[in-house]
Image 1: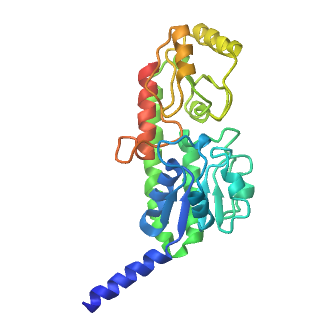
Image 2: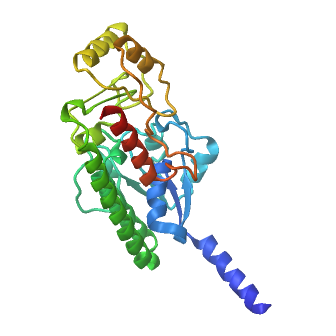
Image 3: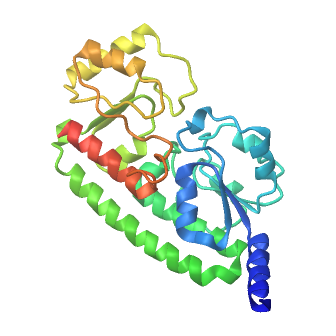
Length: 292
């Protein structure tokens, strides 16, 4: 009985002393979980199924952020209010993208290439591998006693990412080069297109955020003329985003709509795209089927 009590107290103490990490989105949370496992207490700010661009953290989430030992987020306006909320934050902050990612990164000081102007880095496996390595280093700085675990798990996950990257390239290679045109609701897939050899991208909103005004009739007309001229095989709605404007363009141009892509959130837990690896596989499968 005494042995059971001692073990129970030990487990309770370990749980209470675990570092608290808040990840901005379900995608970022999945990366953190892949590296950290049960060594930390992990919370996700933006619930699955929500558009990060449109999310407004409630007071409970703001309080959770304030108490976090480490906040990991993409930056670059993906969750627009987050940068403002984190001003004066007492814990560590790891920003993974955006022009100011390295100035705001308080856990790491050696150089990395910037992610570029578009913060949707999770659609490019090469940039994701860099992000996961930075997450590993941030976790080691936070919990040095778990360094071996973090390094082992990060290495295993990096191999899975390399395998996924190779698979994506093999799949995209089956699409004729002139048909590698990716047009969606907003500019979420520029990083994907650049990484995997697409010749052109565009969007109905013409913005990196979904939180912008609708395009003018003249802008919509120009997009319709463009997709007709390029003989675009399909247009790509985004799951969880209003696709009525894209559907209008598709109808007027006589072009089919593909199955909606995942843009900024993983699918439901336990679903085929409930984790990041499955999320990317689902998107690529949809893109290849629509364009090939």
